[in-house]
Length: 309
Ligand SMILES: Cc1cc2nc3c(=O)[nH]c(=O)nc-3n(C[C@H](O)[C@H](O)[C@H](O)COP(=O)(O)O)c2cc1C
Picture (tube, helix red, strand yellow):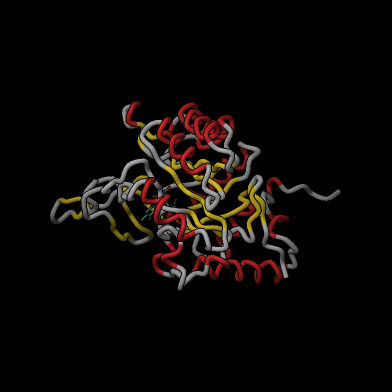
């Protein structure tokens, strides 16, 4: 049977399947559908310093080919996360990634310092799509130097592996990935949601109260794949693919373009058992093709594959 174990910098995962932040609760809410033991890791909803009520409703709209959401990072804040969530996920028998968000580089660093001493947490994922309040609300993910500064602050505050989660809403995502690498990231996650919107022309109202929303699900897979590929070519650190994954075939497509692991988000809303089922399906595909280890396939896109002499 194919070996599914992968390494993300210093972090060993039993398989490359992770939940995507904000789509799987903190992980254990879905336990009866997707056992954490069947997954490489669980990524938490973004945690911020202070509790956030999130945006006004309606915050979700289903489109023909995916989902629009503008939840607005609703969460109970780091104190509640440390007190209530972490002790619960401690026994999950999988890797725990805590996704953090802030409005200034210092907030990310503060969160990282608070999480550093918690042994339940294996790694941090930095949500760079958060607006930089001190910088005209431009997200940290839009400028290499901003991304670098946030990652550098987090790097100084923790010894845990850190993964910078990038936004696809930029012209050259590879340059943002390089900024994150320069700041000391152990890997990048590509990508967060695409900016989108939907309207009801009859009423003249936007479908999501915030007007603009994050687009996710099947429809974004080609964009996410291209972003992950650009990142993999730009940096030497591992890339975690994310965006529109809904099958084992999708997982292996992200692997071939250069991803060492893959996150599943929107697809888990219609099939909460999917993240738990994907590893065995990936294994079956690899066995059918006679591939001994998923690691062999990472970054083997044909244009870059070395032709044996
Ligand atoms: C309802 C919803 C909430 C999300 N919340 C977060 C979040 O809190 N932090 C974050 O980094 N990404 C968040 N995301 C983005 C996902 O983690 C993922 O990057 C994106 O949805 C693309 O993957 P997918 O197409 O598999 O869903 C959210 C996505 C959805 C649909």
